Image 1 (cartoon, helix red, strand yellow):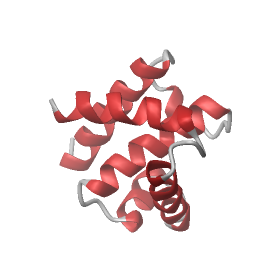
Image 2 (cartoon, rainbow, N blue to C red; image 1 turned 180 degrees about the horizontal axis):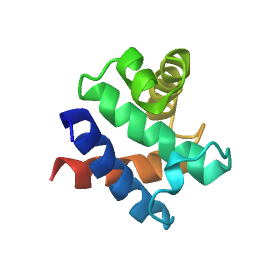
Image 3 (cartoon, one colour; image 1 turned 90 degrees about the vertical axis):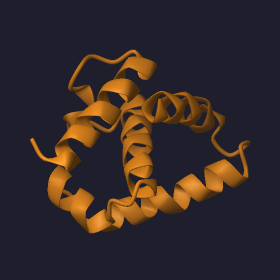
Length: 100
């Protein structure tokens, strides 16, 4: 298992637990609200940790532009918490648990 795979698995597990989802549910192509917000949180934490969007795109078999979109939205949501309060409520506990 590479370092990237370990970090992805760790953050994904934490996020799924916080959202009350089944293990492995974030690794699907389904686009329900909870799954999308979970993926955004996972990817934004990884990008803040220094993983490039291109590397994430290779790992998740998606185009890197999706991760630029996640990063742009993340900045907007953090700067103005009224835009998407659910995101901010979930991001902080996931990030704190990941850091500890």
